[in-house]
Length: 318
Image (tube, rainbow, N blue to C red; front, side):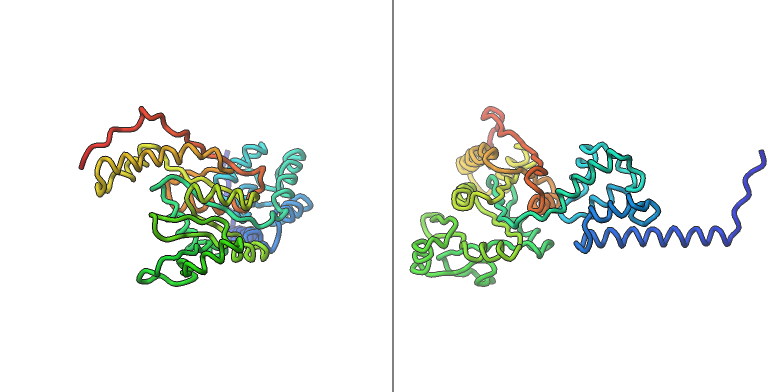
């Protein structure tokens, strides 16, 4: 058999231009979904009505990862659950695959009411680091600002880092039920979570994140039962031990106290709606933000059972 002749140069150029135009068209579709100008269901319906459109040539995985709040990991789990190959294009889906995907997208495109998300976890797990990453990289998420009776430290801005109030003002907030929760810290100053700014943001449809300790999370649950409680976990118990003891700034007794506290806090993880493992800060932050948008049925869990006491490595004096 003689070798197939190369296509004319003009055909190769035309094919290359057509491929580039198709990629740009599909990218525009994904951008429309990402910016909420179109729903994913609208894109899928367009593809099924005419498989030759840019929508028809879009891979299902590309569509899913374009949906705000649905990252690559959750997209892959969704495809597996729906029985759809990651390489499958919208226009190439079978009838039953279209039905399953359509039902999923219809439920996903139904906007969920804005809700408060509470991030808590054991000491040294990195709650502040994760919430700080969200503040910097997800400006549409409002981080709740606590009120405190202590004085501002150098560089702290009222209303940004804390609301700095007098004892009398704090008492007034308690009396008027303006705090979701509050506590005395280190037998000294009081800290609390003002409710009016949270209520105003939620009423405006904004997502609100509150980073707080375990006791505060329990208080918020009582005051606002519809809040989403997310528990941040370390990758392993050994990693948490390393974070707690690696600095060498506490003596053996203090290290053991902190480890005992962490063990008690870890045991409370089943009280929470969802769990996120903080292996890498940006990934943990992304998962927390995704959970804010996810329907209740789409929440996923990453549990790590608290270790038995005998599993705790001995703490050596430094």
